[in-house]
Image (tube, rainbow, N blue to C red; front, top):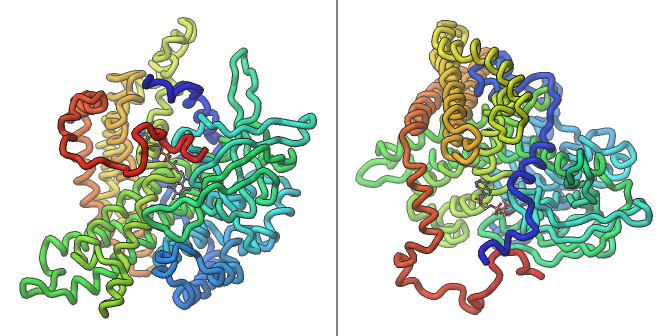
Length: 637
Ligand SMILES: Cc1cc2nc3c(=O)[nH]c(=O)nc-3n(C[C@H](O)[C@H](O)[C@H](O)COP(=O)(O)OP(=O)(O)OC[C@H]3O[C@@H](n4cnc5c(N)ncnc54)[C@H](O)[C@@H]3O)c2cc1C
């Protein structure tokens, strides 16, 4: 039966409920992007551009001054890529530099860098070696230090922080063979024993970065469900697990298309006995902990993206000047030149977005979930496009490995490795599709809070009547004023100089975006969540507006400081012109598209109606029986 593999899985509704439970709710400042979706342009939330303090900056600068030479002199990224191993001397050198404790408070032996300076360090490492960056990031962006900092007890902090800061490696274990984007489906269990003094963890965790060598892991597992209002509520709890605990086993080191130096494993837990005091935060709070950890953890990837694309610009600046074809440097051919202009301005905008969100974390009190998710989504997609262009502009040399280039006497420029190392970033820590859904949920949140009851077929009539009155009062004022956003843009924003017209555009387009969200809700009602492409277009408009504002605010801050100000304005201007074109296109495709037709065709393909097209293929997977397991599930058992 086609449905057999669905047995034992939670329903779509249950998965949603668990994810909803896991949202953070209390913030002093609202999210800029969430306000945009309601048509409110809250420039005050990100202008003046939030930044780390001068003391934090100086501390970060001093650290980067040590990190840079170490990377240059001791990390051979091509060697790591070729051997698939991180040399012990590199790890030891990083330990000596305190690189495993960058985010750990100084009181516990860490460096206590700000989020901004930590991200600058990751940016620098990634620009040289993706594998090394992943070791550091899996350890402290999502590994034990991050949830420990947010939710650990004093005892837990005293016990683990000093070890972690000294270089004990940690990892974050959420994914399972059957559980990827949808963690509510978790199979790993933690059964209370000895009257709840201990828990026995049983199950498997897949693709855990650092997991194959980690000393300490944060492991999410299902603890016994609770009955709430007569309904079973699934409980997920986070545990600190130590490598030496009996029953913990690394089954397999996974290998990938890139980041060959990471130690990523399939892990087995066979009744691993963990004391209650190793629970992080509290029983049943594990999924919320994992998602909150990822909210900030996700900020590392945008910084990695910036490190990657800055390297692309550096590579192409030389190459497009020195490579002569058809009698002229390839950088003088329009098809090449425009891509260099676009990637440079895009990199400026990505950097603005990254350090805007980091600055918000450093200042504190901001709801950064949405900006962090937008930064992850935007920067990873943009970087992939930039890598594609970089490889193309390098021509055959883009496809050739760095060691091969070196062997025949050319500069060992590692575009081929950079492409391989980077690709996974569109999948992990919330894939592009999941980030779209996450952001879409936030885009419609305020409307659902107000009018959700009206769309819920199970809601009692009395509740619907009450909700109708409230919603009618709100929308009677809100909707017409979304049309007046154009008038609001009579605000001049003069202080932005040449960029003021782009800021005005964001102001008036916020109203258009809010109307788009509202019209889609009215039209599709509860079925809107199935219209993923429509929602993704709205989300992408919101993201473009966010990035435009970040770029303008950053350029303005740089101009004020007299730090490459006019050059930054030129890049922000170029970026904004491109963003406006993309936004217009997204709005156009909101109502004129082939979404429904495409969906129907895909279902026919999946039902096997077009297998005729597959004729002529060679037999695949030599040595694997035709009835081999469908997915990773069971593959390792
Ligand atoms: C190199 C590497 C390192 C990793 N490191 C870690 C780690 O340290 N810790 C950890 O816990 N995990 C880790 N992961 C796992 C990673 O987070 C998952 O791969 C990711 O969550 C996606 O899960 P999945 O691969 O099972 O894809 P699936 O969830 O099976 O999704 C498959 C495809 O369907 C799409 N999709 C899924 N649901 C929907 C939906 N509702 N709507 C639209 N599209 C959808 C996805 O976007 C994806 O394109 C790592 C993975 C890799 C490859």
